[in-house]
Amino acid sequence: MKDACENWKEPLREAALTGTTAKDLEEHLRSCANCSAELDEVRARAARLDALLPLVAQGAEPSADFRARVLAAVAAKEGKRGRPWRVWTLAGATVVLVTLLVVGVTSLRRNGPAIPAGEVAAAQKLAEWRAPSDGLLRTPGQEILKGMPRLGQSYLNVPVKTDEEE
Amino acid sequence: MTGTCVSVLISKAEAPETEARFSERIAENQRRVFQIAYSVLGNSADAEDVAQEAFLRAYQKFASLREAEKFRWWINRIVFRLALNRRKGHGRRLARDSAWQMTETPAMVDGAKYAEQQVLLDRLRREIERLPEKLRSVLQLSLVEEMEAADVGAVLGLPAGTVRSRMYTARKLLLEVMK
Image (cartoon, rainbow over all chains, first blue to last red; front, side, top):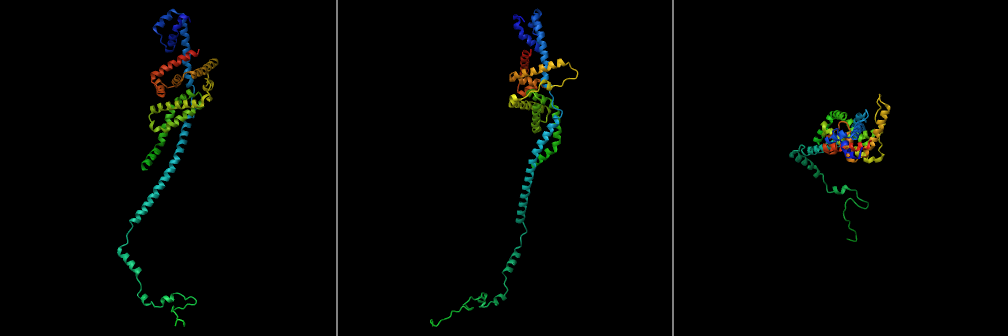
């Protein structure tokens, strides 16, 4: 490329990459064989680059069992998450059952059938009842006879007067 | 408690349907998702790991990603971000597959021409690595099949016009170095 054509370098690259040639470049190309050859060369390079670029990523493929492996990983993760849910549910259900049981028993006790007042009074009277013969059988010596006298004591705790006192 | 129980029971009953739908989504997106990861990481093993991680995250959010289009945009973004994170984490230790490892040799092919192409491909990859980050990201995503300028823009948070202009600049720089 001649020094005079240096200014056309950028338009040439643009023409090669975009596929469109500007009017002033077209006029220049008609009169400049060097730039025409340069454009052909840059176009060929651009075509090679554009053919290679898709291969950078598109040549690679995921393995055939990729989907199955993802689904297995999902299932494994879900399984791990599922277990604590079951434990907490079981614990919650137990707490609720125990609470219901306690509340039920308490309310049953409070609202249980009341004993009629007449029956209570009769029972009280029966407890306080004493047979009339109990009073008749009492004797003055009954208290004395309840216990055994100790050695040197008599059944009758009667003070004995000594000769000196007399 | 009953509300929670009911919603849990409903989600349990819907589980097989959800899995079937999710499996469909994997089939629709796996190639592109893998290729996005591959374009950043350059090796199949890491690309598959990252693609799988992206799908696992998508499953956790699947309730809000039922629409195919929404799913597609979301997973493109997440896999690209995960791949970038992995590349930053691994740094220079990240091995790249060579062009020879990556492509299968076609049965009827001119051996010399094929070899030349693989050498050029390896060289092109190295040149892409040397591009400025903002040009490289656009180029890597644009090279993935089915990724239009709007898709690339959605991943990078750029207007489609900016994507096209950066792509043009990247090609121009590569044209200079790939003489």
